[in-house]
Every structure is written in structure tokens, then in C-alpha cells.
Image (cartoon, helix red, strand yellow):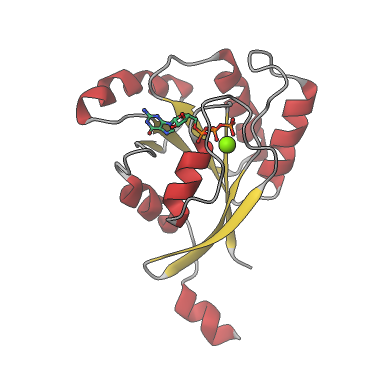
Length: 173
Ligand SMILES: Nc1nc2c(ncn2[C@@H]2O[C@H](COP(=O)(O)OP(=O)(O)OP(=O)(O)O)[C@@H](O)[C@H]2O)c(=O)[nH]1
Ligand SMILES: [Mg+2]
């Protein structure tokens, strides 16, 4: 079984843009309006000697500012079906109350979490992203999905958490 990596986070934080960067193609729909992605989107990624499945989750289009029971349910399903959670936040904004709720929910699952502070388009903007350390997550990375900034390091980080390598897997067949 390949490691499953799920991308989650509030609407409009850049999940689909990040997904497209990770798979190296424009496949997920990216749009300025929050709630653009309606369905889950899966793709296999090969990076160095590792392989994993990445999933872009649907945006929560009902009410962006209130974390509803329905959103919680969708989040739970996404987490349950994953091994590693990429929790994406908008580095151009401050921590949103929903971000806190999402972190709490992922933590309960005991799944591996990588906090991806997106929209850090330049080195200078990293300082702004430091406030996300307050979420208390160990693994944090500052990226720009739009510009491809730091995406290689994110791929390395994901792969550091994958136990087997592709060669071993192929040998097993
Ligand atoms: N400046 C900047 N904008 C970005 C970056 N990544 C994404 N965006 C913009 O953020 C907006 C939303 O991007 P999406 O990838 O559709 O966001 P999403 O989280 O998938 O949105 P939903 O599917 O609606 O939840 C688009 O206008 C993107 O161009 C980035 O690294 N920097
Ligand atoms: Mg999307």
C-alpha cells in the first residue's frame, strides 16, 4: 500500500495550487472564490526513490467562517484515509479560529501532520509566517505553491516520513 498524503485546510489557502505543484501538472481547479474544489482529487507522486498518493480535498463552500459539523465530518474522513496530513494555512493572513479547530481535530487522530504555511512568496515574507508556530506543530514549512518556492523541501519532508522505498516495494511484487 502506498503512503497516502492528504491536503487539507480552510478554503482558498491554496490547497489545489499546492496539489498541482506536487504532481507537477495543472489538474485541480484553482480559483479565487473559496470553495472551488468540489470533489476529492487523487494522484500518484514519485519523488527520488519514494512514491506516495496525494489527495486534494474539497473546499468547504457552505460557510467559510463557521466550522460546521459537516466540515468536521469531511475533515475526519480525509484524515482517516491518510497517513500524512498536509495542513495548509494562508501565510498572508493571521491564524484563523478555524485553523485552531482543524489542528485540534488532526491531533486527535495522531496522524503525522506537516504544517504548510503557503503564500510565502518571498524570503522576506517568512517573518509574517512565524506566527503559525503558535499552532504548536513540530513540522512546519514555508512555501509558495504559486511560485514553487520550497516545494522540493516539502517533498523531501513528506518522503522522510515514508518508511519503505519504491525499489523494495517493486521487489515485493
Ligand atoms: N500569493 C499567492 N497566492 C496563492 C498561492 N497559492 C495559491 N494562491 C492563490 O490562492 C487562491 C486560491 O487557490 P486554490 O488553490 O484554489 O485554493 P484552495 O485551498 O484549493 O481553495 P478551495 O478549493 O476553494 O478550498 C488562488 O487565487 C491562488 O492563485 C501562493 O503561493 N501565493
Ligand atoms: Mg481547491
